[in-house]
Amino acid sequence: MITEDYVSFETAKLLKKKGFDEYYPLWYNLDKPTEGPFFYKEIGWHGHNSYDYNGKRIVSAPTLQMAMKWLREVHNLCIEPYRTACGYLYTISTIPYGSCKCNPKVGGDDEDSGQWTTYEGACESAINYCLTNLI
Image (cartoon, rainbow, N blue to C red; front, side, top):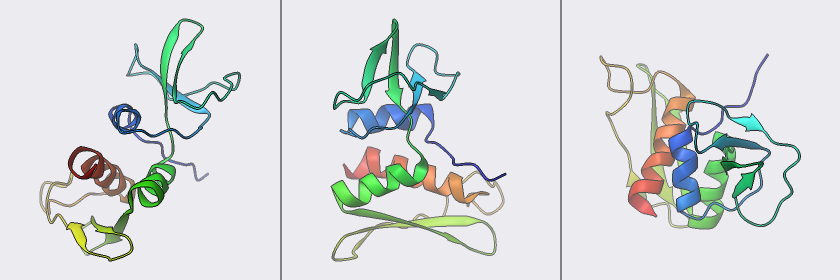
C-alpha cells in the first residue's frame, strides 16, 4: 500500500515559524517530538497551525507535497527533485523566472555518492533548505 510521507517534526516547526498557515489534520505534539504525527480530527480550524489541544501543544504536520506546494504558491520557490544514476538530487528555482537558487551535488544520506537514497529524503532536504536559507 502506498502512503503519503509527512514532513519531519523539525520541518513542521520551521514551517510554522516561517508562516505556514494551512489546515492539515495531522499534527505533532510539541512536547513529545518523537511521537506522531497524530490525527486530531476534533480540532476546528481557527486560521493558525498550532493549538492547545486538551493540554497538548501541537503543530501541523503536512505532507511533503503540501509543503512543496506552499513554498511554490506563497514564496515562488519551485522544488524539483530528480533521479540520477546514484540516487536523488534536487534543484530549487524561482517562479516565474526560473533562476536557480540551489542545486546541491552533495549532502544526502548516501555516503558514497553524497546524494539522497530516496525521493522523499531529497524533498525533505529541499524544503528545509528553502525554510532556512531562502525565506
